Length: 233
Image (tube, rainbow, N blue to C red; front, side, top):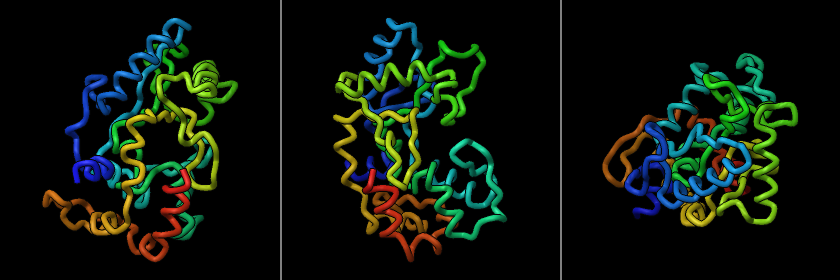
């Protein structure tokens, strides 16, 4: 049960601090420190923009995008106009870049969004946009260095689960996963467990959660959504 609670973003017992405001799974944190030391030898300064994210935080992100309180963007980071899309189209646009609550790899504490502080000025705030990691972007050197290491499985156990566009979640050059720990959780996703959570029913510990605002759009096609955006990655 504990492993499932971690997989769905409902537990924090396995986490350690990696910065004052970010946490990760313990082995992942150690592996990232090792990778950071190697990066520093190349003149890079690896930083983490996002690490562990709990279930409730993911619900708020998804619901805010559905209601318009948070922007939904295209592959170039340009805001999209909600009025131009029906509910089903809007849902798929959201899921290209934001995981359904309970299915995000960030729940596990094994996945990090990274950037290179050496390539930008001190007060730069990364957008986690494809353009930042493209050939003309500030983080392209880091991307090439890391991809070369990953090609020979020499990146301290990290790989990029969203390196290739499979028609579900869009490629994310900034998203790395610590494979040895992530393997413990990636087969734990279950709609039998998720749908009650999405409805706002109490979890195994008796805690209730905010319902998903678009649940009536999700439920009729939940198996297709899971296959496209979860099990295909």
